Length: 137
Image (cartoon, rainbow, N blue to C red; front, side, top):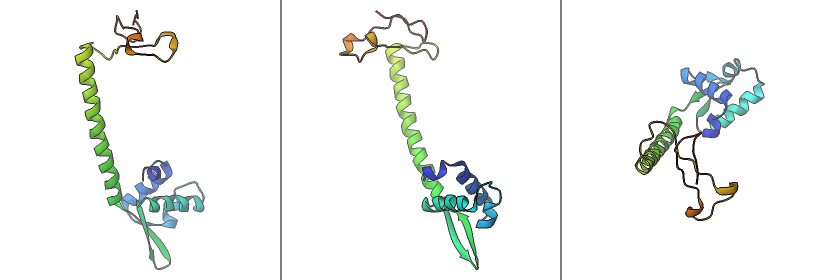
């Protein structure tokens, strides 16, 4: 579903369908692309479950399926809460480990000789916290 939503043309088609159902001809008018390209975009939206097409006489009417967006919203909300909780825990760990630095300055660790570090003891120790004035021993 997110692959279908990633394209700006498909998002614009969904925006049109959010206002009202439309035929393929009406949907294709505002886009400076071929009818075949619009058809491929609609097919992708249909495969993702975001759009349904139904025959009405000789015309094919397209409708947006708002329930499918509910699935995407639920996924985003779950992962938003998950990452928010993880980042809050990380923030608390940094604050309790290094104290309040009064800003967004973080300790910087650079391995000696820009190589992969060995055990923790081989990491330099930070004597000054800050993005530009860190000194290592």
